[in-house]
Length: 415
Image 1 (tube, rainbow, N blue to C red):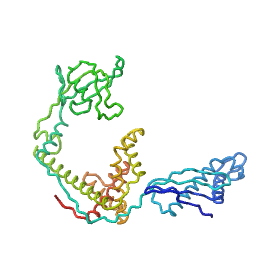
Image 2 (image 1 turned 180 degrees about the vertical axis):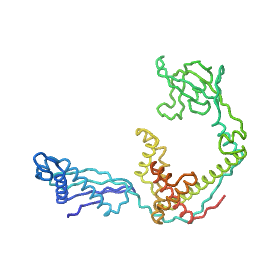
Image 3 (image 1 turned 30 degrees about the horizontal axis):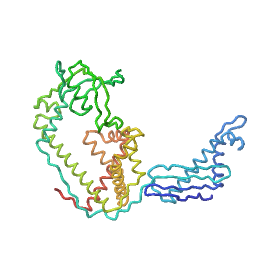
Image 4 (image 1 turned 120 degrees about the horizontal axis):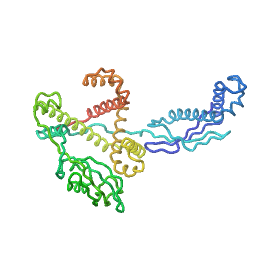
């Protein structure tokens, strides 16, 4: 069987283009195989199954045979490309410039995104400072106030203009040429910044049931860039005002919040949570600082193709329209570049040191999580599998092992 020709035509740190040429005799062998397949499967009038002449089968299934041949040869070409070029693809290849003419070689180009070959000359000998933010009494009280607000009741207010901190129900309708358009209802707490400041100011001048037509200006930092700095006439109707009534902070409140006998027990639990959060943030800061020093000591690329892929992934996750790619990309690109460098460093360390999470690692972590949730491990495993989160758990464990190895090579100083 003749060899398939695979020639690298272009490459950068994260992509390669490969020109593929499949000789005629290999195409013919693939066609013969495809024809035999359809001959065995075909049910054609006037012929027993598997007995139809080859010419009839070719006429009847010509397009399907052609597609089968293409798929087979492209698959075989990709398998050979993976071996010959020692590729480390991060996605399926794209096919460009396909030429498939009778009696001529099959020609096309693979364009494939690959993991860059990152060489880390220095992965240790760094000094990283670990700072755990102390938890004060005011932090505990702030957390307690958050819980208090969540348990608050909202009571109607009548005969009074609304004030900051109160919840209002309003309708806002645009006015064009003196004619109001369709109104939109809104519920919001005044002072939280969820509405244009001038709208909130007008609302606080109304009594429940009143309506006002007024001009409002969109602020310069308004999320919709097309409206920034513009003015519009709107009709605002205030329907309802409610005030927040906070529950008393006592032992009864503690029991309603959770399994706490006293308010002091709740405060102690909140302090423990905040201290654990501060520890986690300090550990995250150590990892980030260590990566920054690794980036500075090594040439770690952030290929544009990988950065763009990450940006598009975040856009899909947050349902950002495709037409906003340029704007979102400009704002998010520095973050995406750092994320790409982070993943490249960790992947390189994992591969070099053999640190990929094993099935045993995953099972042990599921056992630990299940025990903390008072669930059977098998049930939690099934839940994670159904939600498609097993891969995330495996990746998380792999990163833990990679950071563990990296931190062993450096010095962490507690501030």
